[in-house]
Every structure is written in structure tokens, then in C-alpha cells.
Length: 309
Ligand SMILES: [Zn+2]
Image 1 (cartoon, protein in one colour):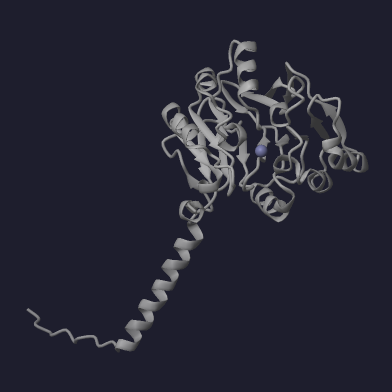
Image 2 (image 1 turned 90 degrees about the vertical axis):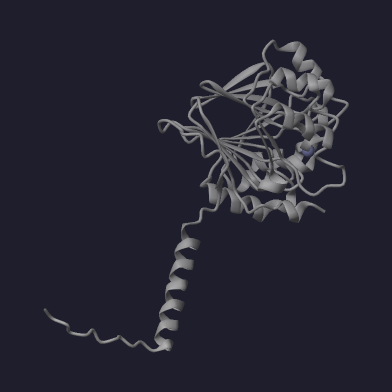
């Protein structure tokens, strides 16, 4: 039997501290590098196949800007946000890999929806610009001028009408023509359909258009509702919400002096929907669907405290 004693290993405290420090730095670097720039808001949902539709609701503060990317990589932008959002929108589109646009749809001539239109037409090689079906489109003159300069085709929305963009259907349910005295209520409204799933883009339409749509169409059902007019109390009536019956809602809103989104609207949405996203709190919101299942991602840190004021 051997009873050889082991010699204690002596390591200087300085070496131990150095090793611990290096390991800590490595762990921090690994954690930082693998942390995604987005959060999966629906981890329970699994998508099937690779024919996926993506819709980005960009964070443009108080305004609207959504980008649709079809499974065939066709791209549609609905509204642009305000003029001062230039770098912000460019950065988000770069992050999302959007380089060109097949369609730019301007829902109505308010600057929180159209302010960046001429810049977008210039920078993103927009093939077709779609405007509301109005006699007077002077409110879009900057966009029209840019379209003429850069060879962008200009079309007017017509409703009811379906535009096929790859395998995605854009149903124009309202072309803005009936309520010309009121800009907000002359917004193009689109019901997107991809296989079994649908998204309703309401722009800033209010109760008069909502009532009109509910009486005009037997089926206004949509899985996802882009909430009208940044959550204003003048829109999203209970009757409209009952007709659309959405599972998810997205409010495109930023700091504002109008009280958007109104508490009564968010309360109605929380009762009606499984999840309600807000770009002022969640940052940009990304929706991905295989035509059956829908996943959501949010693209920023929790901004709740920042926007609570
Ligand atoms: Zn607006």
C-alpha cells in the first residue's frame, strides 16, 4: 500500500483573481453576443414550413408605418411616419433587410403617415405609389412629384378591389372616397389575407367609416387589428371590434398630446384580444405567419418607463 502524501498546490491570489476576471469577461461577451435584438412574444407558437409572410409595424413615434414582406419577397409599405423619422426608418428597414419596395400605399394626407414619402420613393426604388381615390390629391403633391421624378407608377385605390402581391391578397375595403370632408375619415383601409390568416390595416379611420364597413361587408373578421388612429377614442367602437373580432392588436403610437391611446380603447382591446402590442412600449413589432399560426416579436428593450410620462 502506498501512503504517498499529495503535495498541496499553491496558486498565488493574483493569478486566481486574473483567471476569474478573464472568465467573467468571456461569459459577459458570450451572453451579450447571443442575446437577440428582439424578444419572442409568442414562444408557444411554432411555425411550419418556409412560406412565411412577415409584417413589420415600425416604431415611428406618433404615426403609422408598416412593411409587408411576402413569401416571394415582394414588399409593400403602408404609410411612412413623419418627416423627422428619416434615420430611424432607414435603420429599422436595414435591420429587417428591406432594400426596395414594390408598393408604397399612402392612406391619407396627414404628415404622421406621409411625411417621409418622397424620401422613401427616392431611396427605396418604389415601383408603384397608391393614393386614396380622391379628386383632390394636392395633399400628396410632394409624393407625386417624387414619383414622377423617379419613374414610380401612380395608382388610385379602388374599393372593393383585391390586389395580388405574390401569394398575399390586399383587399381594399375602403378607398377613402366617401368621406372627403374629413381627412382622417378618408383613409385607405386594407384587409390583408394570407391563406387562413388576416390583418386589418385601418389607418386613421373613425366611427363613421367603421359603421360603413360593418354594414357594407358581411365579414370583417381579422386575426390581427392594426388599431385605428393611434388608439383614439374616436375609433375602435365596440360594434367594430365585435365585427373584426381580432385575436391580436397592434397600436402604432408615440408621445402625443391627444391622449392616444385612449384608456377606453385599450380596455376594450384587452377584453377582446389575447395580446395587445404598442410601439411606444414594445418598439417595432414583427408578425410572422405561415398562413395558419401567427408569431410575434418585439424589437426593443421594455420602453414602459421611458414612455410613462
Ligand atoms: Zn395618424
